[in-house]
View 1 (tube, one colour):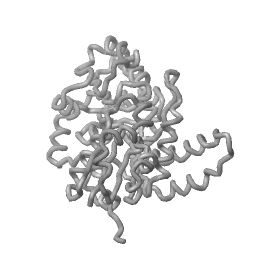
View 2: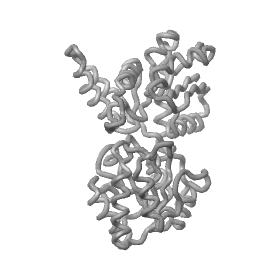
View 3: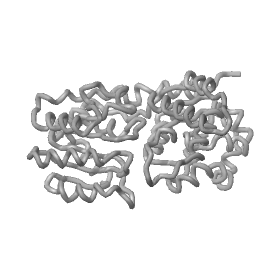
View 4: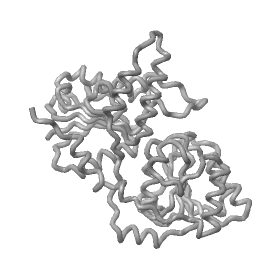
Length: 358
């Protein structure tokens, strides 16, 4: 089977998904085309042109399946290379443009939303990494289309799209029992890890406000702030680096080996995000023995039992963290993450790519 895998904005999680998928299904003949994760507005609107000019020969080949991320303008690409329309067309949504939290610095991305929508409509199969991603896409598209000048009858087609879509998460690499036990043994219960992008949508303000309060109350903890950092980060990070200096054991992006060692040592991994469709960073840290603490919103209620969630407020996070840090009996057991790993999902992905005989 020949599969063309297209990733138009190869962010870290997108790259991980593509590389692990190709490794897990090595019986497939893969052709991978990617574009770097920068210049977002140009990238999401211009990816068919970029590939046409740079990868014409690869796109001119016959394929059984075209598997594209939601950033790919699949409808335009098929117009430029009509033979691709004869392949089985699958779009995979790591995220969707309808569910991003608004920022005063952000210009509304109408074009990005339209690319998401056209790509979903042009595909034979639509796959989301979580039910929250699916539902926020469909509901967001309905609200968006109501703003168009004409009163378009979009409700039924979008609900039909919801019904025929699938939910397949990005699986994480398998973790052997011995490795997981080793990670748990290495855990420092009082060590808190933050390993998200340093951007406003991850809501670092709530996270650090709670840590400021815990520190002022004399609660003992260690802090490792990791994740992807950009040239411009929210100002709260500079303030937190100063105010929490006595707690900090690591600050900023780390080399891969050091990053993995810090995950192994983590006692708690926290999310305060306003924007998450699956949360691989939390999953991978929980797999290595840390207790995940996530807000009761977005994709999290479907992934984490109540004992690992807080009510989404600063007060709720403070209460739960304070209890976990000061009272060992309040801590839940280490979470079983085997249901997120590749062995649980490999066959589903194999079936997704399967082509019905003519």
